[in-house]
Image (tube, rainbow, N blue to C red):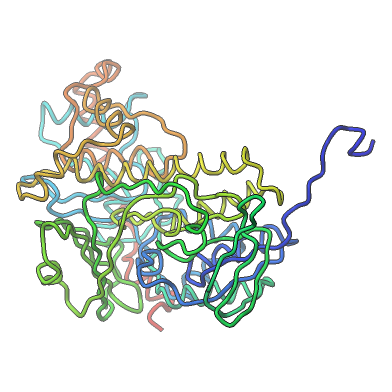
Length: 499
């Protein structure tokens, strides 16, 4: 039966893609598109990364980067050894709640169910009747990070297999070089040049071509904008940019580098300040430091006072395009969403958007229903990352004017619902396109002292004596497990990372 007889319309497929921007987002998009849809002709319009590109400055990543690499055919030998990356198990948050201990947000499980009931519910019950360790002490991944020890998956603790996820600390220059070389190896073409104009077709508002400053014209059927926060291509099509500044109060980022640490660390550090927060992380090539702050509450000189070296500052306007994919142009990375790197989700968003672009590739007509579904999913994911970052501010417990104002932020509706539900009985809602796991939400909320007023009645079925005994046994089992693992610095050195 022919397509005409079956009633199925065969529309022309996209065969030519122009990726604009040669930072990490651009080369990652080009490599993934060519690797996973080999019939595409992919060309990168190569220009230096935008100076305000967060993706090209932040070295810390989420564990999802490992899956992205596997999807496009890169190995650990490529992305860790050759690109000089280190591993990271999570972040230690310091000073976010006065009177409470520092806490670790790691990538893995926090506790194990007790007689089929959620661990955090039983931890809350036990805390009410006895002295128990802080919540993050029941995360194998967090304890490995604190102890500087490394463990691969595969060792059970009290009969349960712990989840231990590792992100990367990137040597950004080497990583970008890797992605470029890999994309070119796959058959991606590269053309140098700066964009001079983006003419639109009068008939439908689609991009007709790109005009470069040297007079060259570039035509494609789909344009991928990886030009950074200015969205130099996507912005020409117009549309609404949704501003998040009412929920995320920092509007400046300062970046600095210094010599790398001699002892490899599995945890990076994030400390609150009187006017925002500061971070420290280290790749094999350099230690990276930075400050996120509100210019309404501090001057640049005040913000950089704690940094170890000369620093570069950028302004940020946090938010996203309502339609990151509009007509024949899709924005990726900072061009689609700008969010401060508090939880290191910037490169994750790039990879997630690329994965979605590949799996939802449309025809040349860029059907509105298909673009609408892409935008719905992408926006849902970005908004929940916004919620997770905002939750750090609204649940923090500090007295300075910046934090007093942060505590009065009226959260987005989805975050408000999450916090209200959790404050009642410690339950968390399910949202589609959630980047951070329920354990991650628990780590931050309980780590900052945001606790429910009562527990789930199902938890009361388990006698409290059994609960306290189980919690104590699990804590001891974690300690034994961690103590038996090799020191990460030794594992790191054996990989030749310092070579």
